[in-house]
Image (cartoon, rainbow, N blue to C red):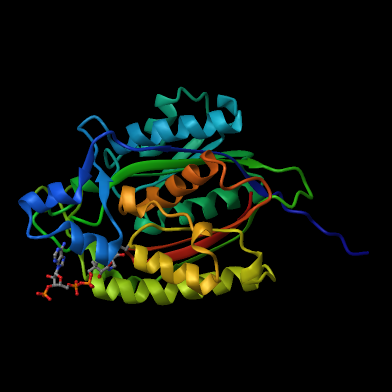
Amino acid sequence: MAVQVMARRSILAGTGGYLPARVLTNQELAASLDTSDAWIRERTGICQRHIAAPHETAAFMGTAAARQALAAAGAEPAEVEAIIVATSTPDQAFPSTALRIQAALDLPGGFGFDLSAACSGFVYALSVGDSLIRAGQAKGVLVIGTEVYSRILDWSDRGTCVLFGDGAGAVFLRAGAEGTDRGILSTHLHGQGSLGDILYVNGAVGRPDLPGTLVMQGREVFRHAVNRLAESVDEALAANFLTREDVDWLVPHQANLRIIDAMGRKLGLAPERVVVTVDRHANTSAASVPLALAEAVGDGRIGQGDLVLMEALGGGLTWGSALVRM
Ligand code: COA
């Protein structure tokens, strides 16, 4: 007799987001940089971005987003058994941003760690959180993406500084009842270290001579993004025996509207089924997917039972997808 072991699914029980109050428009940037609102809008779809004040660190913003996600899930503090924070801009080398957030939320226990996968960080973290739940190691996992890229940008480089913004997004994953068809259906992760030098930070903690700013070969990244993300979409659908028609929502990484539109077209999705925040948030790296998800869940666009495809690509190169039945 065949014995079927049903792995527990991870339900996205609550979402949350946080954006700094300070908004920096393209016009403001153009006042001190050789750029224009028209160039930035045409090439990227970005109109503005949020910029963190000194007190708005990765941990501060991640805490606010996590608090919202826990409230939306109706989760008790003791339910949080693990915290995974995707960030490339932690407050400190250690303690981890995750444990700073654990303390700020006054959580009674659990464990936590930071994960570095640049703009794919949230998809990576979601995958790890899902694995913890499937393996029975945790029943409740906070997954957070939080970034202050404004602090690692070369503000004199018009090719990069216009593209990014600050913010945080979070989800609370809860182990679902056995047999439920809701939850994370699959995640697929990829990395290609040989392409590390097309998008990187040229410094590190412990290198006072090189505090580090972001360096990018924009065209190369663009080319890889379109190709790798298209493959990711096919991979996620094939693994679940689903077709493009089954997808209700695309929640893509928010780097460039042209890349987002290309993915929407590939899926044959009507534009209103693609969640877009890049116009207002710019690229918030690991925070972009959970911020977009929180916005579309919060305003009622994405509802229970909807099939949501998330995808992202970032420095590393890293890329991947998550397919979720809400
Ligand atoms: N304002 C005005 N002109 C700018 C500019 C700006 N902010 N940034 C670059 N330019 C200029 C360049 O200097 C170049 O001028 P030149 O032709 O005189 O040399 C010209 O615009 C074209 O530059 P290029 O880099 O080839 O433009 P592009 O069409 O590739 O657009 C990006 C640039 C960055 C918008 C685009 O490559 C992109 O979005 N790449 C992907 C970035 C990304 O997604 N990164 C994050 C991944 S997680």
